[in-house]
Image (cartoon, rainbow, N blue to C red):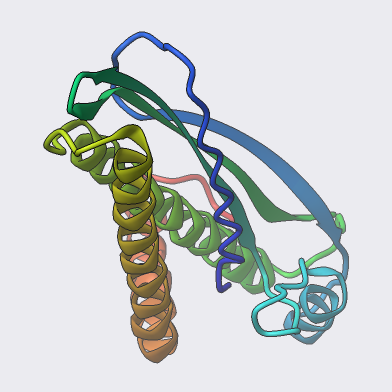
Length: 205
């Protein structure tokens, strides 16, 4: 479930209205078949999105790109960033089980729990990216004037590289923590979902 960190940077001297970082989010789904847990695991391994950073397939993924548009204002002896707008485009890829009519209740329960956790995991990747997009936009707008516009552009490029590197580290750290806690987390979520079903708060799987 690691995220392919496709951080594209576009610097354009274009005047844009001020505002917070923008998020454009889309979803796509891949089909998963099977009646047993082993069948589902095989299907996820076979049809899950392939992540370039690992070369392997995962139960879900989030592709993302940061686009930064910056306008500069120069005057005698200085140049400053007049405005900066960061747009984050993400594509969340999730599994969709073609549930057989005769699938066992325990398999349905496990799938409902697993698929919900996969979606939560990928949405957290989006949240991490969104926070860093906001940080990037704020940092660019807060820069001091430079001696000329070439220096201002170099400053913007340095800020962007530093914050995107910090973003990549945060995403990798999140994946490491999630991987370590996966088994205990799923068992806890299964118990919680079963309690809610027993209490009538959720329909049976």
